[in-house]
Length: 309
Length: 290
Image 1 (tube, rainbow over the protein chains, first blue to last red):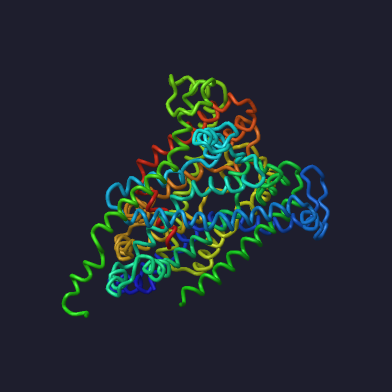
Image 2 (cartoon, rainbow over the protein chains, first blue to last red):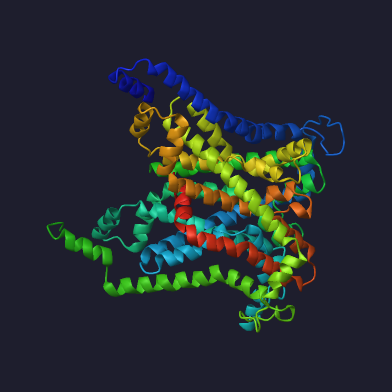
């Protein structure tokens, strides 16, 4: 279309001699701009995926020269490893508890912010700050707060409650990590919902008020359905995020106690860069990849259906 | 019922009973303020601990009896933190320059030109966003090991020199540049690079600024890849160094040092954020929503 425009404008100017030169120049420009980026994406983003599959079918430790083909035995090995099976369960806990938690917290803050006028941008700024700070630093701050003799237990004792084991408890630790993740992501989630809420026309609420709808019914029948595209986006992004939980786990618990917080990505990291079994680690990345793919497709299917109603 | 009184009705519907509305606003403020305490406390506690002496770190007071500012100088003399800041800075600045250059050019070409294979190229770039980084780190490490890039700045940087996210962002903004303006410049005999540098970039200046800040933040906070590709203390970035010296520290008196390190890695970013808030928020809202 643009070429047609250019052609017609040059015809108007009666300078047909220009056209071929201009066109070649343009194409030269386009392809010279795209050459390096395309090479980059193919070599750094696409080939590694295929390479991962390739490595996952081989016995591949960094030191030995030969990398013999071993079929599916890397996959068999990791699924027989009870630590790996546990990391899958743990990762599912991260997703199942973390995604609704993060969405609920973000939506709550966004809805509250909509109700106020003064200090609105002040609150928004403060809630957003954790999102831009270093996850590693924040993880250590949480670890310090949740220490056995840390400030959280100090306050609990002061208020007359009993001290909690927090990160040292195999049943609690995973949820404290989820809380740390949510704490850091609330600001992002809030922004996404705020933008979504602003796109809902006021008119709908006014109409509902005329019909005598209360706050709760307005929320259920107007806010949630109209927010659905944003919700869908958030569920997918948050799920992918929680499936990849790593930094908080490595820094807050190292995967313990008793592997109760160990995640798939931490397992991959340990297999690949502590035991140097690249084959098994790659098999685990393929499993993670398939998990993310299935979950995303499933969510898009299920949640998209609701939009049609 | 629905007669000419509509404006009045709609007014009543919006505000409800005045008392009711005030109560809800008040509750909103209270809840937001409570949440605020929860959001701010970790930072306050971090700063408080970083200024305490080892003897009083277990006390519950937020204000140290005598601020121990030399904890900060001890951090720089006792660890390689200074070197890690330099490393993080070099990597983040170079990555930002590269991302801004390439993503602006690619975003421009994809938004403003028609050519064979455009759709496929755009789809290829976007689909790489779906692949988790974890799937790529083992191949990246094998590349780096074979090419001798382990423990070098280039090794830390190479996976991030172009960002698919940024291409998406820039393409969105480039769409708003009027094509007529570009054609007019072409008729005046301006070269394609001249048009890009002198006409397009000034028009999307704020989007470029957004991209710069987001890419700097991303690179500054990146953890898993720098953790794998750097191996000597000399080459660590701040997050890797933080994780390294914190997990080495078994002695509880080291918590002062860990919190001082956390404060040094977090506070400059918060200040930068307060300056560039508008750009950051808009960048995230744009890429998040579209």
